[in-house]
Image 1 (tube, rainbow, N blue to C red):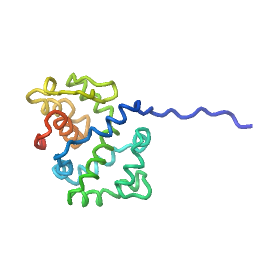
Image 2: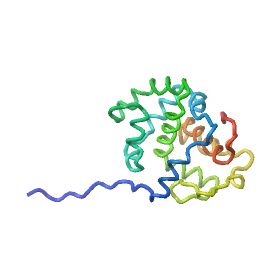
Image 3: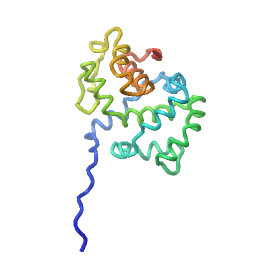
Image 4: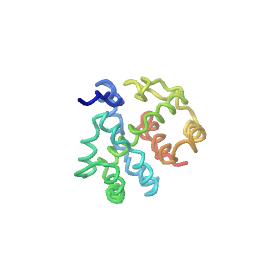
Length: 182
């Protein structure tokens, strides 16, 4: 008789409304997120892809949709990292669908970082990095907030992740914002 084993602890996905909000929050119409990836450069893309957590994608039910969008028959860390060249080519040709899904996979995989930034900026959230549905950031994202975030988190997190999230937050407030590059 084999001894009983305890199931492994998993990160619980957010409740259904938050999961739906996350799927919709990426980028407004007219924003070309592939241009942010282009502004970061290929080495930054390689670094960001290394920070994608497959377990987190599964927990948030983004694993299969991302695998399909990435054109991968098998999604594991090895295949993901070997695909960055193809991702770069697709992003360079303006593949906005891949850019949005890639940004979402990166951000969801770094929820801890997102929570830290939101707390630093005193932006209300549900404790898991999800903004309220009626979020209006003008009150919180005052003049120079981007540089303050960079100064606070530089060295603790990759610059490429900082810039990706700063651009994301900018577009939450101003749908017409230009790409932020420090």
